[in-house]
Length: 369
Image (cartoon, rainbow, N blue to C red; front, side, top):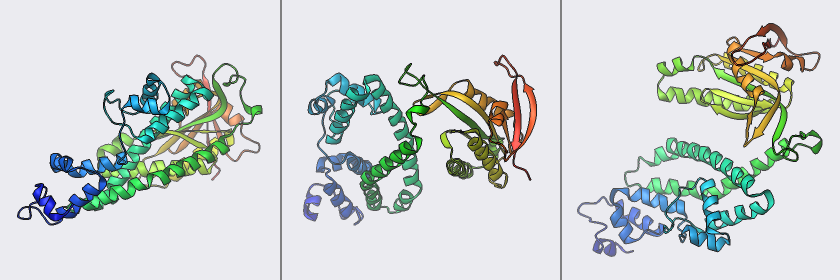
């Protein structure tokens, strides 16, 4: 749209507006915003432009139209949309794009392979993971390129930064697919190792695993003393360090729970080595409070990317019996270590715990000085 046309539409007034508004208006028109949308947006113009970029500028459909184009019943399309974490717009609202047709169609095909309930549950897990990834992506953008672009009063640089980031999403999706492929290769379980109680038997997936918890002691006190920026740095160091050490040692991070990490390993030796490495590293880092870890070994229920059962609860509960910068484990765990062991083991004896009928044999372990 020409300069004179912008003037005629009342979108730009050279006697009042900064000259930088002209390229901003042109960019918004290029994105696909209409004159009426620009006029009605007012001070929210940049936000509207970014939303249009996120939508892909594609033709929008109602959920009924998506269902029809995907060849699935409307109720099934609504089920899939809810499981995918999509906020439920009204039936008549044109919210969905052609890409949503592909989403509904593909998930619908999975119903025939995995079954309805199993597919929907898998999609819910994926939606939860995407929500966490999305929050992390937004925080990363806001504190890096977004912060720099915001210094441009016209808002043009902020739109450009958002557009460049959004255009990377398809390639980042390829990165996630490759990461998932690597994980599936590494986590593949031969039929000989699958429990008789697995999905092939009683509809549950159980595994023999070493489970561990490691938590920062006194982090609440640290939080009181530090600013939110300092707390962010400390948590970043903890999460980065824990992920690197656990993964490099052959274990897997299950999840972070505030200032605590839950992890698992296929053997007692791996779990013990990872736990000791983690507490020893934190001991040397002055930015973090002391760390302690608890380990237990046994059969656990694997469900939705998480693990459940008495062994998991026990690993969490015994953590408080570990010394600062120390590791405590059940006797089953230490007895399962390969001989000769690389650790110094100190038996604590049988410890009574509320809610557990029998005392639990515990031991601390560390590497020789």
